[in-house]
Picture 1 (cartoon, one colour):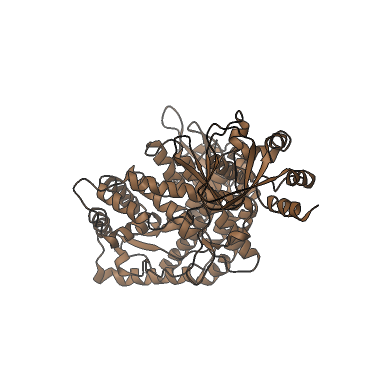
Picture 2: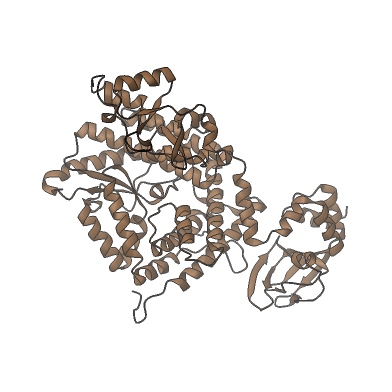
Length: 625
């Protein structure tokens, strides 16, 4: 083969849709290529003219237009255009213009049709355009995990075992022993139809009955857990896993149309969940000191890598890692109370940021706060809570959750306040949105109570949901702030690299991708009064509120998932290589598939930010600060 043909073949082989073609087919394509050169500013194709070739950009950049003259896309090296005209009647559908000196490989129509008919991956690629291609990529990555497709009903191995909630402890123990079950669902049978009223487990017997030396005739209702956490029968196994992680429970009643159908346990999940993140959480709660927690925390990265290698999606991985982080915090708080004694007034330990959103990964610091009962008296009570906050913060640092450089921790007295002060903070941030208040809103409006009086945090969520949506000025300023972090795409859809002296020639996928996407989604969620914290759940609330144009929510969801999963895989690869994980990727280390779809995802983010600027504007007559 001539040197020129070898060069053509090798370049095509680096990019979709040619990279998966058989070698003989690729040779054939290279032999049929015609080379064309266009100066910057010259027209390549015009609307309605005959479509004779598929165009492949060897070098340069091209703009694609709609027939109205509106810019549709910018393409660069390795991109193709003209396929739609070839597939739809042989006339140009989208005009093209060179925006810099451009070299094209032109593949004749008859060869294009042959590839389209005989090569499945080639056909799939050319038939899928832009956002649809990204959606296809996201769906492809989710299909590999059985956890993502298997329903919880698969784990129900036997008929439901239940009893009336008016039986005694001895009777409950007898039923559980005879039936060989570790949990007994208890029913209120006083009405026309029995209803679930509670559950008692082996652990409840140990921690509430035996430890307290309760008589065997004690009513089971005195010991059972009444705040039942259940799961729908149509839910997937991964949803059951996340529910257990989030709530630190080991048994879930499975419900169909409001009626219990069975109970699944931790051991059932572990059979399918080979990453054992649920097992890690279980092990965390068995530790008796900080050193034990530090030892267990080493399993977190192994769990993360296994989940990545088993094709879990970003929501599943983020929720699992956040669940582990919450469990470490919870156990530290329990150990702190054992050391310092019972809290003098009720309190809620509040997680912020990615842990609150269920989007935590392995490169993370700690963001937390304490919400105290309004009976809190600093002179009398703060020594205790200051010591508790320090114990927990130091413990988290020992377990790999670094101190927050911005001092957003409960050790800072400003973030260790009674509920009434927190409400004052939140109201001031919303109704007086100066720069510092906007920054605080970005941090604290992702919040989740993880230990203590959780109702305190729920009150704060309700306040944010009800007040933020009323303030057009607050939303406009939040939107303006969200535009400060732009996606790393240049004018020609090329990647714009970091040049900060530390990670030169890389892309920070958090700072330039998932971060600004989370900011954008948060604003839309605040505008529609959603109390959801997770970005994917917020997007569902935004969709239900019909706040965005048709298809926009799906596009944002796909973009968030794809950028997040590339970031996750990058971190997992670093861990497997014995390196310290980070958020900075080098584009040349990504596959052509990842580079192309990252560009699509970043373009969605860019479009979303443009809409944000349009959607949230200051009230008439008011100026943004």
